[in-house]
Image (cartoon, rainbow, N blue to C red):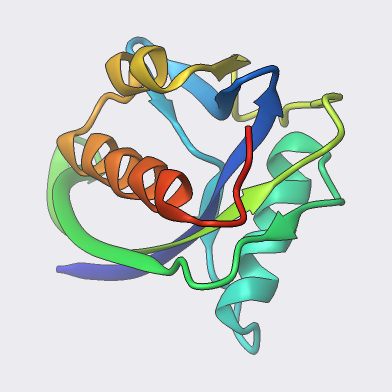
Length: 148
């Protein structure tokens, strides 16, 4: 079994009286938040910020205090020649607000979009991602100083 850690930022912006979440399109029906592997020697937040920059070009993000979420998942991955191995991933996510709207996706993505909560929820391919989005959205709505 392969064990990996993936770290990302649930990236959002305010648009009028709504919250828009940034999702990246990986292909097929797979959309997800900006995320990637933690590199040796990096702390989690440094990894998350690096991945956000690499995958979207976004360098300015305000990390929302008090939100830190993690979950585990596994899947089968083809190693080579049809041989599959189970991959176990531990995912860690921060929550961050951006003011800039310019996104420059990396070569590993096909597209991106800013989506309201309901649309983002439908776009999220995996149940774990949907649950993560629900927790982040509820967290934002409960913040006393968060005004739309």
